[in-house]
Image (cartoon, rainbow, N blue to C red; front, side):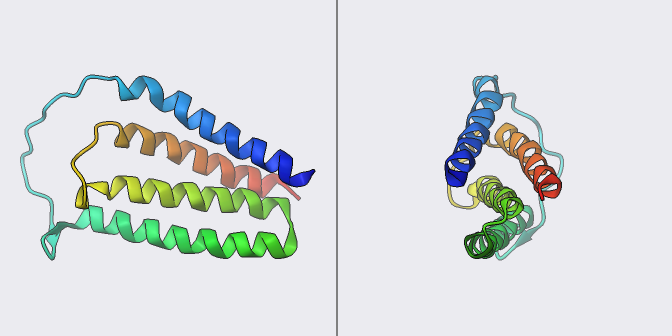
Length: 128
């Protein structure tokens, strides 16, 4: 029964992310003039490499937290696990330009994910 409520919470979070980002996906894109180049490392933008690194770290923390949750079955670990997973998704989304073309919807979705991640950590702190 506990897992059923947890899966509903996870689906609610995904629905919330979708609903928040849906209007932003159809927003018009404006071209801006860049005044300076971003710092690079090995031919890649440093910001994108750091986002990729934080996504990988968050994925490792997600796996460790998931293993801890499976061992202890403490509800607060589930919320922290979800937060780490969403942070990993956000890290990979913001680093996508290393491998793919630029997508205009990534920044609004990443901002929405920030809100949901903080909410998951907060709920995890409140649970006993």
